[in-house]
Image (cartoon, protein in one colour):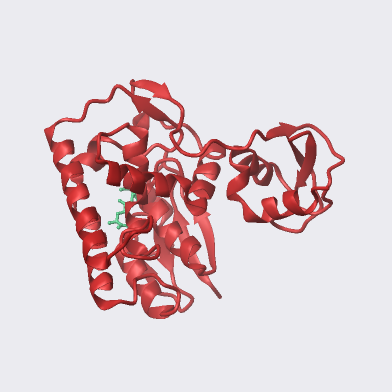
Amino acid sequence: MTYELILGDRAYSSWSLRGWLLFERFGIPVSTRFVQFDGSVAAQLAKFPPARTVPTMRTPDGAVISESLAIAEELAARHPDAGVWPTDPPARATARTLAAEMHSGFGALREQCPMNLRCAYSGYAPGEDVRADLARLEMIWDHARAVCGTDGPWLCGDYSAADAFFAPVAARIAGYGLPVSGAAQAYVAAHLADPAFRRWRAMALVQGPDLPWYARDYDQVDWPGPAPLPARAHGTGPSENAACPYSGAPVTDFLELDGRVFGFCNPFCRDKTVADAAAWPAFMEIYDSLTD
Ligand SMILES: N[C@@H](CCC(=O)N[C@@H](CS)C(=O)NCC(=O)O)C(=O)O
């Protein structure tokens, strides 16, 4: 038995992104499944009482946890060496404080700038309440760096649950072109470049319906993260690899990159790689190892 994690639509579900990053970033094995956002989430979670929202986790021993902060705490307790929180006590206390404030706050930003990983906008002018949320974010991010003596990309030293909690905020700042300080921009850029975040976004780009509630009428611009490698779906093989980089199964679906053809065991494996090939180490290993 392993952990089960129930998630929502990757493009829109900011809390699901947090929950997934906790497993992906800290190397904790998990089995995922998804609810649809065009139906009742609570109804789709009927087998996981008392959960009503995603992410919902079921532990190997059967406990159901449907609050992302509780998921972080439970994983930290069960996997003390995984690095969910910093080990240095002041850094750990600070990371916990920031994650808790994210969990309970920033209502204007969350309400007015819903996460949508499928597009980025220009021309959105945040009102005073969103600007106040941004100012508070800058303040607590600067505070964390000062307390933890951090000069790397993340808030409290190595990537911690605090950073996982702010990944969707980074996506909102990037996606709505929100005005923030240079230091905050650098933190946003670190999230956009993070391979785990990029893998989630690559899957968001290729799976799930576009839901009208999340659409906004602003002009669209290119996603401000790293540009993907120029991979394209390719109709047929043969491919350089006989086995899918992810499952090891025989290949049936293909992509072309730099004039070379690679195979995958299903269209989703292929499409998520087309969306952002460099984010997938198992693919890049094959790509690099098969280079002359
Ligand atoms: N406090 C919860 C919030 C979770 C949440 O609101 N999830 C949203 C998706 S991002 C949801 O399931 N919404 C469905 C609904 O409210 O019916 C947590 O920390 O996980």
